[in-house]
Structures are given as C-alpha cells and as structure tokens.
Figure 1 (spheres, rainbow, N blue to C red):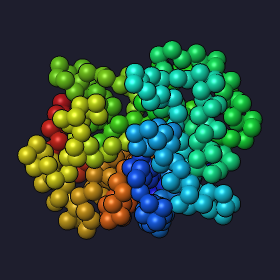
Figure 2 (figure 1 turned 180 degrees about the vertical axis):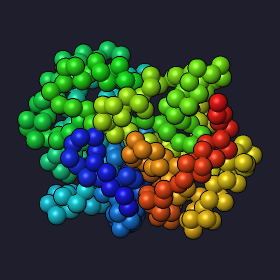
Figure 3 (figure 1 turned 30 degrees about the vertical axis):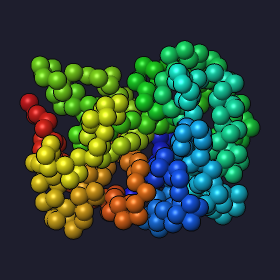
Length: 319
C-alpha cells in the first residue's frame, strides 16, 4: 500500500480509502469483517457522511462502523484516520446547510454515532448556495478549539467556492472530494483538450485539478468505477465488464491486468493513483474480494503510454 500526506496536514494516509456508505444494513459481524479486510490490505483511512444510511436512518453507517470496530478503545482509534461529512439535509424537499448551528450539531451527532471524541477530517459535503463563510469559520474554530475536529476540507466544490471559504477560515482546507473515474474525468479532459472545439475541451470544473495541486489540496476520487454523471441513472453503472459500451476500454484494461498479474479493478485504481497529484481513491464496495483486488492497484505505476492508451480507449481524444 502506498501512503501519502493528506494536503499539508502532516497526516500519513493510504492512497486508498474505504468508503462506508454501503455499510447500511450490514450486521456488526459483516461490517467488522469488511473493515478488517481493508485494514489488513493496508487501508487506514475511512470515509463517512452523516447522511449515509437507509431511508429514515440518518447516520446508520456511522453507528454500525463505531460499534463494529470499537472506536472508544484508544489502540483502535489511533490506528485509523476517520473522516466524515456534513451539510446535506435529507427531507422531502432536500437542501444544504452550512450554518454554524447545523455544522456544530451535525458533528456532535457524528461523534456520538461513531463513538469517538474527534474526527481527523471534517468535509462540507456539497456546496450550500446560501453559505455565509463567516459562520463556517466560527463553526470550524469552535470544533478545532474543542478538539472535536483536527483538519478540514470540502467535497464537490469548485476552485472559487474553495477560495471564498478559505478567505475567512482560520484553518487550511486540505481535501476536495470529487467524482473521478477513467470514463468520468472532466477535470483531466479539459486540460488535455484545451482550446479544442470538442465537448471534452470545455472546462466544467474550473480547472479544479490544477488548482488543487497549486493549493496543495488532496483530491479524493469517489465512484472510481462508475460510468458517468452520478445524477443520471442511465450512467450510474460500472464500466468494468461493460463490453457493450466500453468494449475497447475493457480489452485494454484486461490486457494490462494480465501483464501486471492483477485484476481489472486494480488497473482502474492504478490509472487514478498514477496521476502525480497523489489522488486518493475511495472504494465503495463491501465485497471482500473486490476490496483486496482494488488494493493491488495502490502501488502499480503505469507507464505514460499505458495511461494514455487507457484514456483513449475510454473514448477520449488527444490533440
């Protein structure tokens, strides 16, 4: 397992993260086995959010995780990097809330469900159009001074949204969690196809990849095996094994998997981790074998030719 520094936090973390969104409905025994598998593979980073759970059971995944591993034990807690997110309001309408009151209340709930006294990282889940950055700053300072949160970040934010927040914050934003996979990589597309009159040449992300590198923010890639736009149900399926839509891509990935003696899952991971931005990959699978397979890609260093061959096999163009 390869380990990197998260942002400029000084925290040494695995470049693969176990995403805990699909722990919902698992027994404590099942959850413990999944978490133990991840740790045995070298993963020390675990991602949560206060909205992860079954309908009507906000924070269910955090509660299952906390009970399964026993975070109240110092020896267990110190072996893990725990991250959670807040800001999404689950209701019939749906909304976002970055108010000081909501952030403080959300973190208290997260800590209670996980059974721990602090989070290593807290992320603001999705942008709140009604955000008042001064309130966020007050909330973050209160949490930091109380020892409840050690480091901060965001999820699904554009560069100028990050800049607006950072202007008021007393602490550096270390992370931006973003959707990234071989077939959904607009943050890479727009840089490669700069000034080209083709769809992938349009900058949809505000150059968030380059911005993050300049600001020394770690990008965390969620849904790394997913086809396209998360909002579209028609593209919310994995591309691995989908020969109907991604036949050429799967052929290339399978050939490289045979070369490196790993599975196709490992190659999909390696394509992301090969990027010099030191991107972390969030694994959402609860399948033990798939977790083990993915971890094989942590340290594979694809050649430039292999990386670009995969990119083009996904239907991307080069100038």
